Length: 298
Image (cartoon, rainbow, N blue to C red; front, side):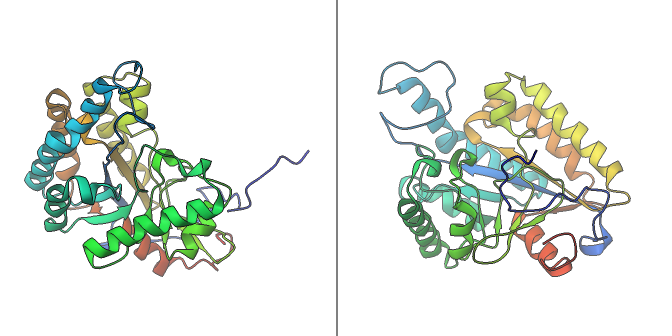
């Protein structure tokens, strides 16, 4: 029996990959994916602190907005204290809503990756023409603000249509963060050529962990520490990628930020032997080291 498939990549086990070293001979690359998101008031999608009532759902809208007004600024300070870079996954609507916040992360030298227009919508429900236009609009907004187009993309809600990878490649994107199937980058096929998938976590991600599973702030911090320690050991013989996915309206809350500080401090103390970096840096290094025509990876 042959099940329906996506045809985007082949099955290649983690035990059968090219040997790649990160810069300075390091084996574990660690990046923080910081989601900066803006939501429509009175309509559309959004994570919920408590079950929402009829629109306008003031409780959940205001809870999410705390991340832009307070939480993200506290997280910026934390990242500065630990000298940690980040990949900022930005809704294009953030440039109109909170330009000071985008300026603050630009000043840190953080990477800005595409994250749709707003997390109030899913691109999986759009027609191909609508999705292409949405990607183009988000890309255009980031390019105008940052003086360069984003290299990477994370779909709002990790939602894809059957042609999303094709449209991303056609829009000039070099990598996607949508697929969480591996601990190394993987080349994907599109109708317009290869697109690199960089690992983006759905376990080490505060929305599934805290919002969905109701894990505590301490639990989530322990997950970061335990994942890091285990992957340091696993990477001794094989280079790996560890991503940490964060949302300021969740982990930017003071009691969670305290535990996040503990976890990220643990990671940062190992900067002498791990590569603390950005998703785009990982993608460029891998693309140079493992081109898409390497046997078993294309």
